[in-house]
Image 1 (tube, rainbow over the protein chains, first blue to last red):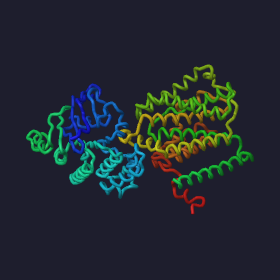
Image 2: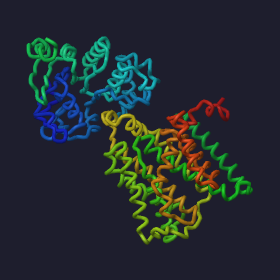
Image 3: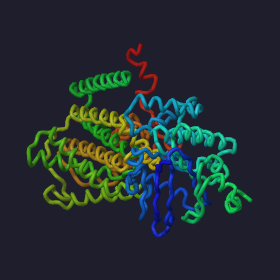
Image 4: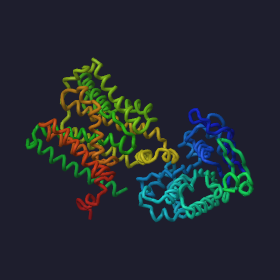
Length: 237
Length: 313
């Protein structure tokens, strides 16, 4: 399989705190890869480093043979990597439609944008119903959908999802994960960061387990879900 | 798009009619010199409020140094007109450029700050500008710069104001403006959408500061003199009050805020002590009953009454 994203031995610091200690990982084209781990393991930090919001002190990140570590976040979107940030971060005083338009900020191809908009509404019919509503008035689940839809509007080849299940009811989480699967089937590669290891492993092809800034385990998602170590640590026995 | 143009045309026609009426009243001496001066001041304050709104209201960067940029424009214009005899329009344009350059110079290092920190930094920088001016003898130092010809008529102030209002309106409605609003709403999300947040923040700072400079230039040519005491941080606060009162993120609001507060202080000019109390009471009441400001983030032109107005068919 073709490697799409290659993270090579990155070290990330918050001031003096060494948050990521030499992480390497790969995402192949067409996959869903998940990063799981406890609070503070460095999952979100890894994702934020890939999307350019943080800079690694050492190590490189390569996307489709182009080195993107050190590139500004707004340029990385143009390369084809789009992030759904943790906690949704929708533009609350803009309408749903305006949020989605912001997602296509870097694009000029009007007809293609229209097609992608239809695609987003196909995945998230509820957004279509609420087009003119202000994003701040949406429920948590709808905001998550909007954040995902907005990220899809930049037509990314790699979608980075940061804790899409956060604060959502179990039924809604299921719905969101089904949609992630659909999006992936339509050709978008997904890198998923999750605390909800059970859900994440159920839809992922491969997984990396993070522990205090290092990768402790990695491999096939189904195998990891079955492994004793992971079951004990993250899946509640 | 077309309906937007129509709205623009309507707004311009209404403004021109308003101008004609006011100018007529001035020429017929129904409005005396005192009111002419205040009408000029209203126009100048509208320029300041609308340009500050671009920085504070639309881009969400709390700046408390607007009077500093105004001072730069006022002194630039005064020096050009008096010492170099440049035509008024050229003075205005160069005032814009110098204030904008200074805005960018100050914007670049401080733009990493946000919220309270940015407010304090801009407050300090505004004061620094004033104190530097106070100590430069070439521009009159603490005594102020005197002998500026009175070029600013109501017509000048009005048409420059009209230009600035439309410029900012179009800026805000462009993709630039969308980027600014996205930054205000959520900077990280804006960054992950591909918005170059630094660029748009500095640009908003530049444009806002530049127009403050224009207002300063008009101001200097109104009163024959520019004096450092006109540009203290209290003046900066005054403009912040105007835009908060009108509604952050509404150009109509900024215009209303500038108009109301300037008129109130003109009407109460005989009782300066009372003025500040009434000011304060108005603000407290407003924040109680309408914390989003008079207009919130709504524009007059988007209200149905305006669309119906003047033969909407």
